Amino acid sequence: MDLNTALSPAYLSSLKGLSLKAKLVLEGTMAGRHLSPFHGFSSEFSQYKGYVPGDDIKFLDWKVYGRNDQLVTRQYRDETNASVYLVLDSSESMGFSGGGDVSKLEYAKVLAASLAMMAFGQRDAISVAHGAGEPSAFLPPRNSAAHLRQALQMLESLLPAGVTDLESLFGRMAARLKSGSMTFLFTDLWQDPKAVLTGLREIRFKNQSAALVQILAPEETAFLDGTHLELLDMETKESVRISARHLKPQYLETLAAHTEALKSECFDLNVKFLRVETTEPYFQAMRRLLQRQRS
Image (tube, rainbow, N blue to C red):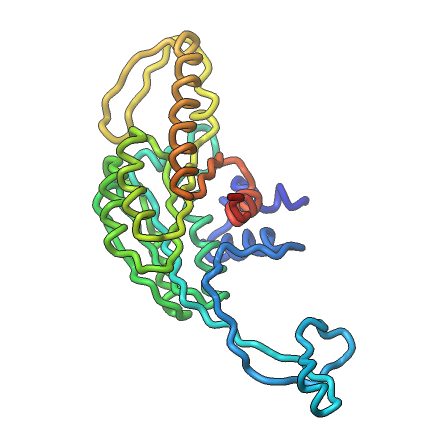
């Protein structure tokens, strides 16, 4: 079984336990790579160690060598001042899976759990929040094994509910963010871009580093096949009959304009924008998310 298959959403959905899924995704993400989105670290000198062949020579202390004629390397202890906020849109629309094995919310949960485990390993404080508008739950940032377990349990038990109001969700969360933190926002972005960006600006204007992850099912990016269909709004329960064949071009054009408007504003705000589909292997989505954004 290759990596794409082993870490695909379809395969991982058959496994039990969010922590196991996140661990596998994280191992696949980091395999042969040196990726980290967390740049809030300061390195504190810990101790000297006698040089042995194979040690990285960039850590040799030449001043000590000059004084004592002895080769030693400097060892450092990483200390962090960063908090990582993981904010999930848990509205009813995030429960959509289309014809796939994984809903948009489940996909968001696995990505968020993987980031939480990575942050914990790098001594960052972890915070988890979710809601459709007003945050339904908020776990303040801390770094401990017990806190990580609590964060993963919160994510694992999360179910979709409520009507999307990202302006409110992002705005309410902005008031709780600490300076110097990183914020990851997971949502399908099914709302008017102006409302989304109003809340997003509140997060960015607090000097937060932010990433906006739009998660869609394949049926939402390619639209539906067929002639006469009845569509049901998962949040309002309203229905409408359409001719998919005739509406598809207009839908795809509107979706492209919606995405471009959000991408353009995110670029101006220096917010990383990433769109993923629920069929993309998690480790590939993680690698794209962790790549440094070019200025």
